Amino acid sequence: MNKKINLSEAEWKVISKLWELEPVTIMQLTAAFKEETGWDKSTVITLLKRMEAKKAVSYVKEERAKKYYSTLKREDAELAETKSFLKRIYHGSIGLMVNSLISQKAISEDDLQELQNILNQAERDDVD
Image (cartoon, rainbow, N blue to C red; front, side):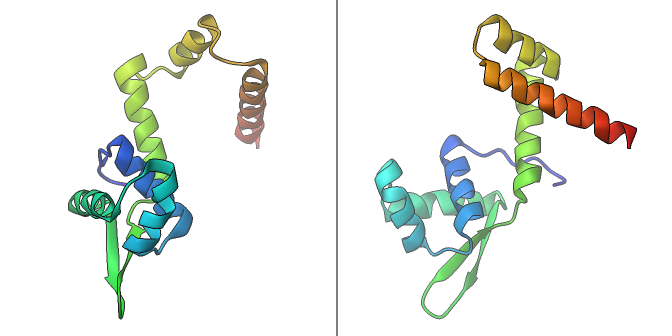
């Protein structure tokens, strides 16, 4: 992804659902969100139009309905959002973020073990 696209929390919900279901119609998206968020068709249309203007989604016109899909790769969008978050909150430092979570007891033993496993795998990958 060449340029970071800023998505609101609601737009993140939509793009996540698109990654899960795409291509999908407005009616299918509305049904998927109805119970979770209570959004109606007009809300979904508004979000899709905003995201279309940001070039985060597009659609193909089929016989009876538009089928929407994400134009962003999930990995690229998540990495860009993570980097932005780290830069804004922790001056780009992963260590500062992890230290903050540990010192505030906001990280579980399972989380620590998972982090250790990730670091061990990264070390093995560097050696190979």
